[in-house]
Length: 93
Image 1 (spheres, rainbow, N blue to C red):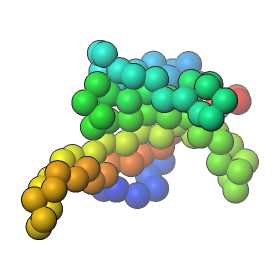
Image 2 (cartoon, rainbow, N blue to C red):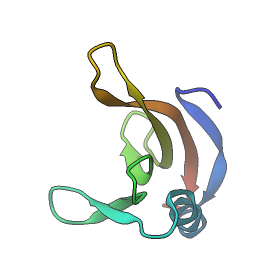
Image 3 (tube, rainbow, N blue to C red):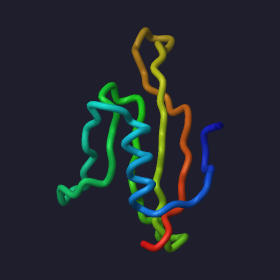
């Protein structure tokens, strides 16, 4: 799936969270907001992430799944670039 706003379906919060944990894999790290609330998870290598986000314009919650890759730019620096960014609408939240 190409990068960009791609909604691939809908699920309950519990189903989306379980899918998110599977997406980032074993050894994941918690992603927290400024108040310390867990809002998602990042893979151990930082290449995949999952997070729940409230979208005020749409008035709904979405689960966000991202995948990155590393490349060496023209200056020889290792850089992360987003490869995939897909969403699942959360039902009943």
